[in-house]
Amino acid sequence: AEIALRVGCIGEGLSVPTLEGTARAATHPLVRAVLARLAKDERPHMHIGWLVLGWALPSLDEAARARLGAVAEAEIGAFRAEWAAVERQGEGADEATFHALGWLTPEEFGPVARAGERRLRCKLARAGLA
Image (cartoon, rainbow, N blue to C red):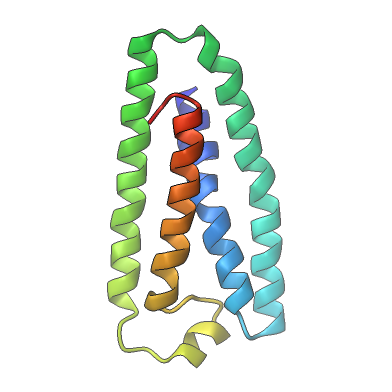
């Protein structure tokens, strides 16, 4: 359950929205196509994570669920730290360069990442892990 949570639910769940956002922003057709394909490929991995977690949750006691909730918070915290670094590194670069490379500007990246986090947190709450 923990691996499904870390890798599928959280890792893929947070990467899909950012990949979709970068694909939309990319100005070069090849870069846009690659990013769109990556996003499309990652979505089923996310769904598998949720399927495995859904299968495992009924057999877990409250202590195990609480531990998974703590794991989820730690993983999300690690992603937020990475996002902050991404936002700091991109300060001062021009939008055209970012989009040509298939990146979101720091101003674009933050809202996309946080929206993905909100959707993830809603799913975690429905699973009883928030």
